[in-house]
Length: 137
Image (cartoon, rainbow, N blue to C red; front, side, top):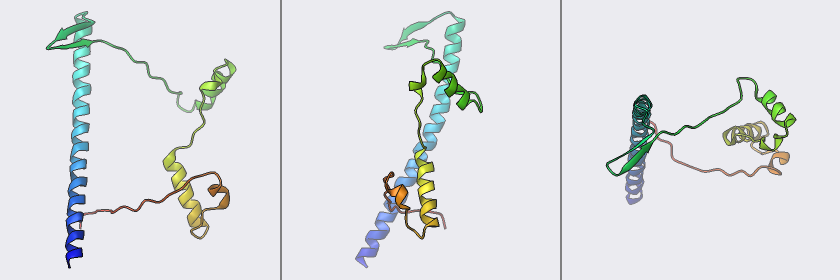
């Protein structure tokens, strides 16, 4: 019976930790949205006032700009071709999403009587992690 009470105690601790993590993730999302809103308001006001930087309460605030780029919708291959044609092909990195690869290997194992095909095992490392799932009753 002592072993069961230890299991129940660990189960309660795990559930509490997962619940706390979820609360913190939700709070992080709320704070990220608040930060984005305030950042936009402050940067708009600084631009309007033509104030590129200022110091206040021991901190310096300054306007900065970041450029983000991505291929146009459906244009990844065209972008790759253009980069290669202009001598910038070394920027291109071939990759496979880790979750997609894991799903593919799991599917292949299921299709092959719970055995990972040899050609996959030769080129892919795999491991399984056992965890405890929790759902509401």
